Image 1: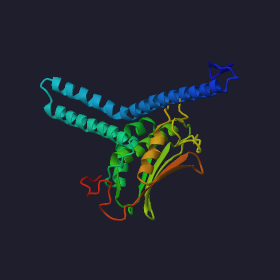
Image 2: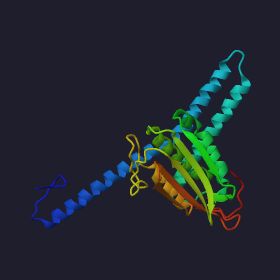
Image 3: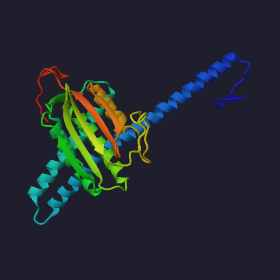
Image 4: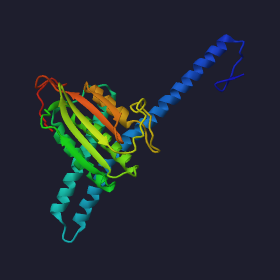
Length: 270
């Protein structure tokens, strides 16, 4: 008979056991290869934006230098922006590598409100292109926290990008996106609320490789969860009363200044 694609004599228990073991190994190998392919594609997706910015600034720099006479100041500015985006891409790679090597986050003293505003600036083109109305409600009582700035930025960017895509798929108006921050006891809490389609499977949404997007890789939210949990925080999603979904994550407030993964005082603030 055929068993998992292999010819097996059902009267031979040893062959049956070996066939089962071989089939399990083949399935495990196929699963690992699929996981690597999916993860590689997901990381490429995360890097796409800074890489596109690098290309754009590089072309602008060449264009300014080729002008008659050369526009040195403009070319210098484009080169500086190119270096900034290249460093940002390198930071993303190093933080993702650290995440999957189970290394502790490289914590700095982080102003979460300032980081949210930086993400809003970064995503401004996408927000405008999809006719999204952005509202930020940032709590004045939110203290600085010890966190990996690049990793937390990636979480917020991913949640904002998902919200924009949900809003773009909705025919309802206005296309409202609300980002909030506030303090809740010993935690800083960030909400990313959209009034979009609300098509979310809340039981599977944070599982690796689960996606409702035609071109989605299903790794964005899984990576977000890994990042937040590596910071001893929590992330969850709820359906809004009217329409849409709110993603929320919380991060603990350090009880004593200088309680960072490196064991030293932070040298960088965000």
